[in-house]
Length: 389
Ligand SMILES: *Cc1c(COP(=O)(O)O)cnc(C)c1O
Image (cartoon, rainbow, N blue to C red; front, side, top):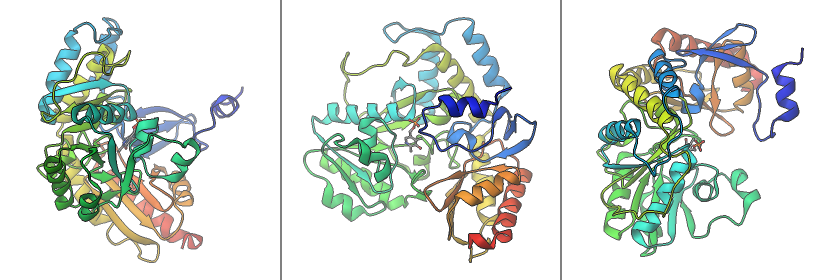
């Protein structure tokens, strides 16, 4: 019998760095491979599995809606979409939302709406920032190896240093449509923003007539210990792209829209699958799980505990441990890839964030006992491997 690995290797696009592991099932904070081995999941669907794998309430909602209605473009009204919009905007604290299918699409919407709202052409983004891989979002993304093969990108994007308000002040002009920033840079190495920086960016945008876009795609839905990371800082973003865990793991996204963005006119944007009832039903169930199980509270408590637990990792192997809630980055003094491989052998799956940062994004339903096992596995892997020093 040909293995899944052989078949994928024969037919896959090739754009993903693959690990030699075939995952066939998930439950809560665990993943299982095709040989029945169990792993503690600190990949968390790259941020899409905050509510845990195969959550019964989300599974039931998807099953039920699949038998009722799956396709219903936004030219019609729909009961599930109405219920989702009501719930999502109440939780997010912004009155309107454009519904789409992924993070990068939510960012594209935010960039277009900022241009529509201001009539301006320039976008300011940050070094190390990540906002997606379609052309508009990619133009805001920093990493040269994601960008360079695709030049020319969208013109009039500037990248400034993160956590540097003076740089933003110097870069903003009367043609700036928006400043786009992550509250914690995820892909860029798990760098939390300073509170004064984010508040200062918002103020600058308001004074200079630009839109403040807060990319909460990775930080939203409980990840950082609040429903949305902006709530740590009392911000009021004008545009807030979200995706990843919004629908409990199904492909879905939204761009929340604040009142500084005026009326948006029909035909200025849209998507065939936008706001489709199956995703809306899944998202309603996922948001209910988020609130009813207080996953943000869990992330705050467990994340705080884990950051302390990891604080005394050996300093000859670890440069710094950073995080907010349950997005945690461990900056190593060596390449992260061998550490990820060794952790997998210890039954722990984790992510990189750049070449030297080990990133943990577990489902927020993970237990403290399992986080303790993750900490022990990291200690063991770092101490057992002199070649990693
Ligand atoms: C993952 C991510 C995106 C892109 O989302 P996709 O669904 O992969 O397109 C954009 N911004 C941030 C901050 C992300 O973490």
